Structures are given as C-alpha cells and as structure tokens.
Length: 187
Image (cartoon, rainbow, N blue to C red; front, side):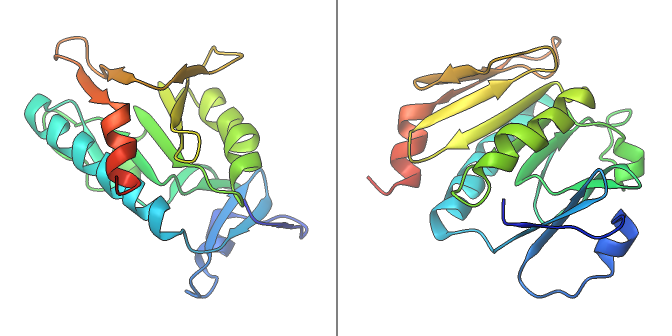
C-alpha cells in the first residue's frame, strides 16, 4: 500500500469527501492509506477471479461477489476497499447496502508492490479481527494464494487448487490455480 498520510484522525466520512483523483483511499484505525490505481495484470486477476466466484455464487446462492471500488466500513475510523469481496444473501436476496450485508464471507486482495506490506499485515489483522471467514492474498508473480482464516497465525499457501465452501449446505467451488494464473498472465 502506498505511503500512509498521518493527520489527527481520519474517518470514513472524511475519506469519502476526498476528490475522485484516480487514487484509492482507505482509513484504518484513523490512519489514511493512499494507493495508486491498480496495474493491468492486477485488474485481469481481479476480473478473472470475480467471474469464477460470481458464476459459482449464482449457482449456489451462497452470496454476492462485489468488486472495488466499494467501501467496507468496520468502524467510523476503519474503512477498507478490498479488490473483491463476498457478502451473504439475506433471505435469498441480494443486500442493497453495506449496512444490510453486515459481514464478509470472503475478502480478496491482489498483491502489488505498493500494497504488499499493508495487505499482509495491516489489512490481514483487520479482516481477522472482524471475523471475515476467509481472506485471500493473491500473489500473481509467485503464482500462489495465501489463505487466512480468523484464527490463523500463518497462511495456508495454495499453488495448485483452491477449494472454497462458504455455505456447508452448498457444494464447494474448486479453482485450478495453475489455469487461473496462466490465464491472468496470458499464457
């Protein structure tokens, strides 16, 4: 993540008032984080993963996949913008707002040099402390996914296959990571 800008106390409301200038703004415990627009390959990875999850979630009715830019506010002073996230359906219906969704089933960050430290440390701790069932850090360069759960002290490192089952009443989705990374990297 880009350099943090420190002021007295940033809030989600203050961040929402910043100009639409192509930067991504997040606030974590009152600290402002500014990140440049994502790279082409980052966006390809996000789009490919969103397509896989969206199709699965439509079949299973286990949740709704959303893409950035979309603010996820955990507190007045903590608002993040995951590259991709999944919220549960409410009585079989799509939530109409973050307040309705209320929690994340999955948060995904596509790693880039400017976000690696924050994604692996600061944001990971936020997602774990907020009880996000799974947090994936997708490292396209290393061709792996780090899977974190709330109680984990170390990630599960996945290179071949990723299996995700957000609802035990539904079949899991299985992703061939070798094929995923080949598609993202244009091979």
